Image 1 (cartoon, rainbow, N blue to C red):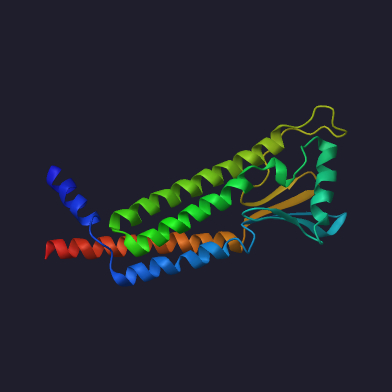
Image 2: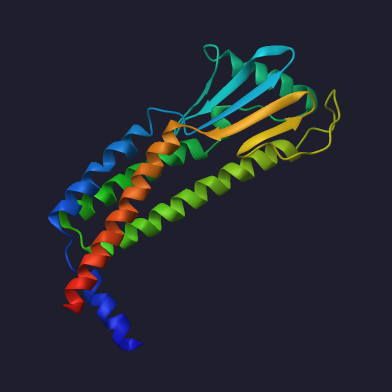
Length: 210
């Protein structure tokens, strides 16, 4: 067992191939593009809103459909059931995400210029951590919105869990919650780094066996 760990330590200390370096550096582009598109979209449909209400969640801001008016309308509806107001200032994650993505971009560039296989493995671990952390915070945020309802609200409803992924019926509203193009860009970045790591590991193990 000690020999296996020793060999693995030698393998991950080796520099990554030039082609892999170029590929990893190019993956910063989809990561940067994730700022241009919504990460998540929540859409609400009801008979009184035939065109629906939409809220797009970007890495750093919220944007409502119909020139931003939909968020105000969603907040008006939520007020009747005692749900707290949805606004940028109450979602601290939107202030952290840009720094987290920027940090991942710097690590990717470092791995491309100076890195070894160890740097790619570390980058994969950090991508997994950042992804799980912010998704967990997103789920917790939705839980808090649906469960921390003001008792003096005009309409009394049972605490509920809003839709995280997929469709959910809440009263006469059908709510759709789905990832958007920003998340797809992140998936491309993460998948690319993972594939680069696996390719490099396979190449180095073959060199060791030879």
